[in-house]
Length: 329
Picture 1 (cartoon, rainbow, N blue to C red):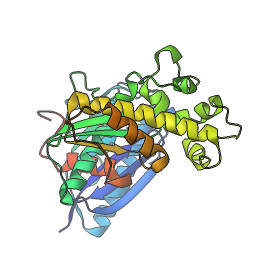
Picture 2: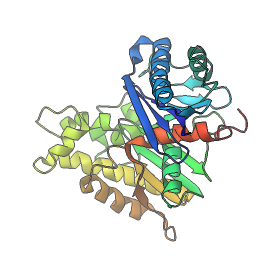
Picture 3: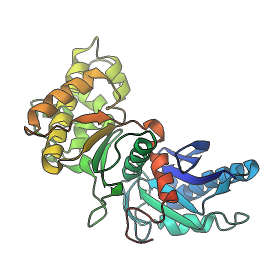
């Protein structure tokens, strides 16, 4: 009989799910929009709905489901209790949600009750776990210390040591987007998108949401609203090129500081900026190499696991004997 785990990736826009084998094979997928502004109860109900869809598919296809559901979720997650300790306002009332308890309760009445335990972890930690699983299953390096930085709508990070997420004393380790932004000659371009321009953070320059405001600050005349649109204009628009280069150099300085401080075996980049091509990647690497200490050979590499990373990481939670982010369940 085929065996699979239910894995969820709960984000502010979409709640995605998949049936995933122990070796990372995707057997089925489902997704629903996340009702982020309707509150925690509605978000939890959507997660349960996606889970039920996958459980129904597993039953129809004769797939045996693991009793543990893994989920990567926005927010700082306590791996001991499965509660959301803090979160941005992107999901209303998400701070304080009893994610493990309440989602398990919503699945209690599924016939046969295939899910008895819910193991959550922060979404970027799930992404790092997924990258490690992908690397392991494809004969790539997966041991030692891996630091992953996700440059998406915002900026997040995660560190694994021999496959174990390092969550920190208050379970907020990896929130690199909240670190002070390295100084740059064009730092002022990103002030318009910052709530505290006198104390700007990395996310102000390296989160995709910042690019449209920065483009206008650089003198851009086109009506642009997304980072993708800014990148699309780079060949013909000096303002777009200026913003992209500034963001890349700020990212490179930050990443150089990370390897100087942690000296990881692997530094992995994921997200939209990391996949945007040479206009961002090349100035980022150039600055990184200037900041990196002599003798360190680690340099940024692109993530290998693609869009399924967070789901693969969530599945690894389900397939583990215990939550790898905590000593005990």
